[in-house]
Image (cartoon, rainbow, N blue to C red; front, side):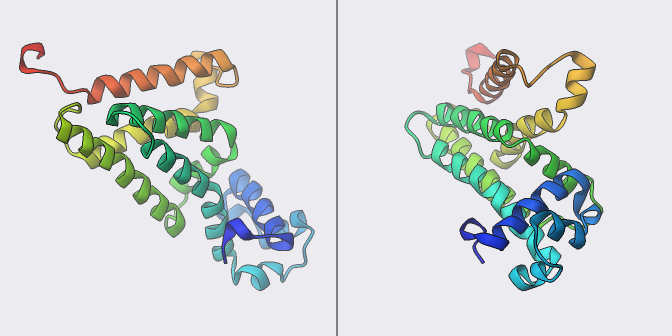
Length: 207
């Protein structure tokens, strides 16, 4: 089923599962707890999704699908490749800040002993290909330095993810309060400058 078209009980189950998976992980969110939170009967997950695993896939697709769409819009916008890469980084940060449960869900994926969700893998691969294609475009026009586009894309994407996942320890350890709009803006600007500096091609005379 299309997660974005889910309505009624199916939508309630996705929302309840999203909240509980973010808080407790896949194993810690029981079918009973999910259905109770959604106000549904115990058989509702099987009826609407077939299994708890399929519900988990639907949650990941519902959560991460909009991020993929934002990145695609930024990548397809106007401007030089570096400008569109900057727009993509800012769009990804905006998404992660607007959806505070997303970093928690990502952390659950990273720390769980379970196989990574197929939905998460598909979205990750698509996002890496998207960013790598922009890097390749910049390498062709000479604005982006030489290097493996996929590895460079991984470096770019890892910064917004790590910074938002590490939100609490960063506040406790180095007093970076990402709830403060000014601090958040400075942090995003710093990452963007770092990305641009790391990608920009330089002439031989500047090296």
